[in-house]
Length: 517
Image 1 (cartoon, one colour):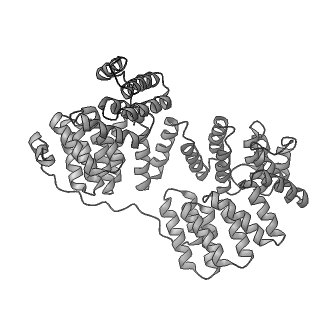
Image 2 (cartoon, rainbow, N blue to C red; image 1 turned 90 degrees about the vertical axis):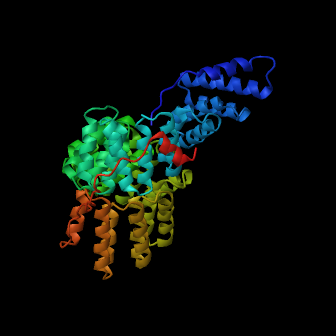
Image 3 (cartoon, rainbow, N blue to C red; image 1 turned 30 degrees about the vertical axis):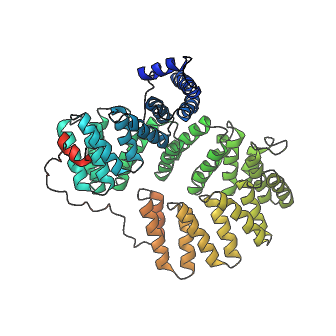
């Protein structure tokens, strides 16, 4: 929700002037000074400073509606929607006819899942602005949150009858259609809105979800591509698109997107870990072996470590050593710890186990929770027959990052080798709960279940996976490779639509009856 900065209102200006007069009390002066400084900071784009100062103003004088109004505006711009909601509720305690506050309370109330309050504020708006479309949309959204689909649709239709191009009403109707599993019709409505109005990010995300639920993969993919263009700084979206390209066999295009993400956030260690997991999800097909070293040539050390670790995971520790040789000199630091761990793992795979363990122990002494080093050490400890220590290292990683599939698989491997199949299955199930669409975890879970004579349970697990990510080709292929009789997922059956209903009463008299005013 975007909100433009506004100049300080006239009433607040009066209060600021009054605060400078000798007759004012200390709280008056404090509040007026803080409010004036908050407004200046807000105009200058210093939102956090403005927020702090606005809080000081209401702390000094919490009985002045204009201070709460200023706090509401700044909180909204800062993305503190809960704080904005609270501030605007205080505004209407002092000015029940404040249209700005009532409109925003309705919108924020829907985000906060408070449909009854939204109804109340919408009814008040209907009294103040009878021709306004927004109160109808607010009441429709509140009805939908309560599960009253027919009433929600009636409000949407009534709003669209007054203003066919109203974006809020279009989105409301699309959400009602989606709630009834009429995904195609909902998507058509949103597609139509995109042709007219700009600032389409949220609608594209909604549209992607609609195509996802209707199992329309081509349009899902096309919408995801549009979303990547609209949100170049949303790296989750960029990497989701790269994953879909990998599934379609477009490795070069996928790697180009990943390269761009790396260049945008070259020092982001967490992002580097996410990219590594994405590479590993593709098996050995993410990067051609003969290009791994060249792709790693002109990136930061943090990103070099991704390519080096991937090389070791696909059986080429020699490439990993070549990538990192000479790049990891010096003491362990937060910047080079992952790269040092990748190098240590590679030399360990080459037979230099003592050297590898010494390096890994040094990294873990510096950072006891470093995932890359702990996973590598757990693997080597397991090979040396030290299962208890290996399990401890692997559990440390999954406790800190439940979605780390590599750590989960390492833990399951050690537990299985020790004969603790039930514990291994429990670890895999925990991983699947944290990341239901992960094909590596689901593949291992299914094969472990089959190995213990529980094929039906394995098939159920694979079914749950494809339901969680119905447009993921890798998941579909995995399921069919293990259960060739599996029936493809189908979209939810649409519910019958209600007959056209009479308009919901929204006259000022009706609003009075609702609010009791």
